Image 1 (tube, rainbow, N blue to C red):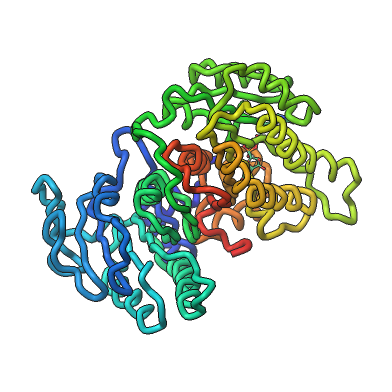
Image 2 (image 1 turned 180 degrees about the horizontal axis):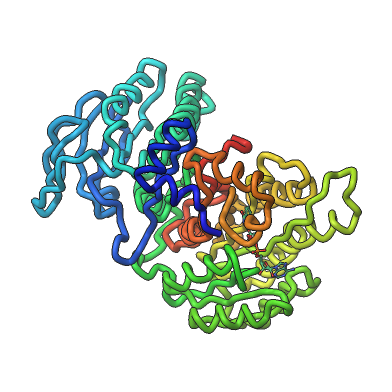
Length: 467
Ligand code: NAI
C-alpha cells in the first residue's frame, strides 16, 4: 500500500508544512537497484581504543567504496587516497578518481580495542566531528568485541556500545542507519559488512549482530550470484514477504521452490514460473510436510526459509482455543517439525542455511497477539538453541529475521490510525518493504555467512516497539 505521507514529505511544500507542525520527516530510503548496487560516496574507516588487530582494510576495500582512514578525533591520511578534514574531506579512490567534497556514505568505527571508560571517550571523539556529514541513507557501523567474562571493565564498555549505537540510531535521521557488529575476525564478517554497508540493508538499524570465527573455508564466493547452483525452498512464497524472498534468492542465482497452501496454488505457480523455479503446494502444518519436501527434492536443498505465517488476533480473554492453536501450529510447531524432519533426513546439504521468520511482536509483545507473540518468540528460542548444534552436527546455520511494520496485505488491513502509528513509530519514520526483509534473509542465506549463526536480526527501521 502506498505511503502517501512519505510521498507528501518528499515535496518542498510537504517538507515545509510537516516541519512547521513538528511532524515526522521520513527520508526516502535508497534501496538496491541493478543500476545503483552500492552506496554513493566514500567509506571512512575510524579507530577508537587503539589498534585492534583486526585485518579490516582489505575487507573494507572489497566493499567497492573508496576508503579513507583515521583515528579518534583526526581523519588524515588514507590507504586508498587522502582525506582532508573529517567533515568534508576530499577522498581519492583507488583509481585516483576524485569522489567529491561530500561527507562519507559510510563510517566504520573499529571500537574492538576499547577496554575502559577512558578509551570509550575515543568513540565520542571519532564520531562527534563526522556524524553530521554522513550522507543521507548512509551507514554507521560500529565494530565491537565479544564481552570478556574475565574483565568487567571491558564488558561494561563493550556493552556500552549497544546503548550508544541504539541511541545514535534514534537521533541520526535522514534515512541513515547505525548498527553494531561484534566480531573477532574481519574476513569472517565480510558478508555481514558488505550487507550493512550497502543499500540492501536500508531498513536494518539499531541491531547488534554477533559474527563468530571463520568456520573453515567456504570456498570461492561469487559475490554477484552467490546462490548459483543452490536450491532454496521458501514457505508461504505465493505472495507478500515470501514472494519477495523467493524473488531475491532467485536474483542471487538460486533455484527456488515456492511452497504455499493448495488454495494459493495458482499464485505459487505464477511466482515460480516468473522466477524459473518450481511450485510445491503443501500445507506446512501437515504432519508429514518435512518428508514430502524431502521426497520432492531427492538431491537435497541448501536454503530453507520458514516464512509462512498467520495472525488470528484477539485479546486473551476473547481468544478461543482454535485461534491459539492454529497460529501456534503454522508459525511455530510446523517450523520445529519440518526443521527436525529435514535435518534428520540429511536433506539440508553441508553449508546449508535455515532462516526462520520471527516478528517484533514476538520480541516486544503486542496487545491482541498473545498467540502470535508466543509463536514468534518461540521462533527466536528455536534459533538460539538449535544454531550451535545444527552447525556442529550438520554444517547448517540457523538464524531468524524479525520484521517490524512491513507494507504488505497483512498491514494494509490494519485500521488507518493504528497503521499510521505502526509506520511512523521507528527511527526511519516509515514502514519497510518486503524486499527489505528479503535482502536481510538473502544475507543470512549467503554461502559466505557461515559465521553468522543463532542471530535474530530485526528488520524494523529500529521500531520503538520492544526497543
Ligand atoms: P501474508 O499473509 O501476505 O503471506 C503469508 C503466506 O503464507 C501466504 O501466501 C499464505 O498462503 C502462506 N501460508 C499461510 N499458512 C500456510 C501453511 N499452513 N502452509 C503453507 N503456506 C501457508 O504474510 P506476510 O505479511 O507476507 O508475512 C510473511 C511472514 O512475515 C509471516 O511469518 C509473518 O508472520 C511475518 N511478519 C510479517 C510482518 C508484516 O508487517 N507484514 C511483520 C512481522 C512478521
